Amino acid sequence: MDLRKMSTHELFSSLISNIMQTIEEITAAAIVDHDGLIIASMLRDPAAEEDIIGTVTAVFDTFINRVKKDFGSTESFVSIMSVENKKFVFADAGENAILTLIADLKADDNQLKVYGEHVARKIKHILKGEEVDISIPAIVSVLAKMRGGKLPKGEYNSKIIVLGDPAVGKTSLIRRFVDNKFADSYISTIGVDISRKLVELNKECKINLAIWDIAGQMKHASAAPFTKRFYFGANQCFLVCDMTRKKTFENIDKWVEDAKSVMKKNINYFILGNKIDLQNIEVTEEEIKLKADELKCGYILTSAKTGDNVDDAFQYAGYKFCETL
Image 1: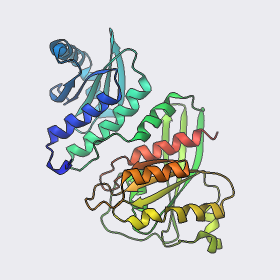
Image 2: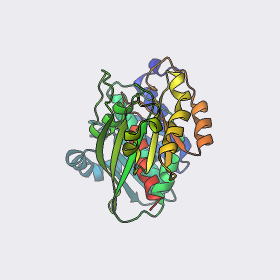
Image 3: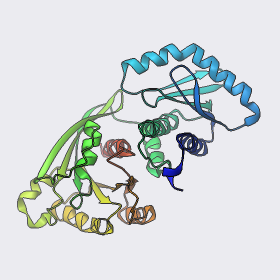
């Protein structure tokens, strides 16, 4: 499917169709503007259209002022409300859009929040005219399960080293996550760059991520003794490849070997297949999945340029760190 040929409405429809297929308890989904006008919608039972739309209208009449207030006071939000025998999910989807989900009461709140936030982020990108992958990555299911688990209370520190060949987008991915910015020009990292960002998994569990961007030119860490101090103390490792350059994917094994030659403890690895916004793709998702299975780690396809799936990758890192506490 050529996403470039799809209209905005078709992209929206595909997104909400995907989330309804993923969570069977969702009975209706809609993208709504701040005034409660429906931009795109889908119903599981078309025969119940009048009842569902009437319920949505009633809910918005009741909560629209609260939703508007939330938009004005926070960068993003997701809210779940129970009304009679239904759950209503409202997720920030940009300057003039709210993702609204209607689900049965038995629907899991963690699933609704994680999937709702994920789809809402994609809606934001579409509204900005950016290309997105409308499929829902498998890692989102893992995030939903992790969020549903018991998290430790407190504020913790975790170090992530980001490895990969030159120009795969390591620095751009970090910049997109930390500053929500992207630079078209390429400047190679000199040795290492360190970024920090606080990830709030919930109100009682926060992770200070120290993200170490290791220069792609340093292809043999074990041969450079001073590089050991860059790797030391890492809890997790992001392995980044460029989906448009097969060689960068093939070199993942070398980066894993280098990391293991320096660090004696086991750490969590995670593969990021970057630049999915480009057309000349040389690496398939199936190839990345097989490599992830081989390394017994997770993976996700990302675009540093549009931000697609970038936040999910770092959220996953936060949850995986909690598993080690």
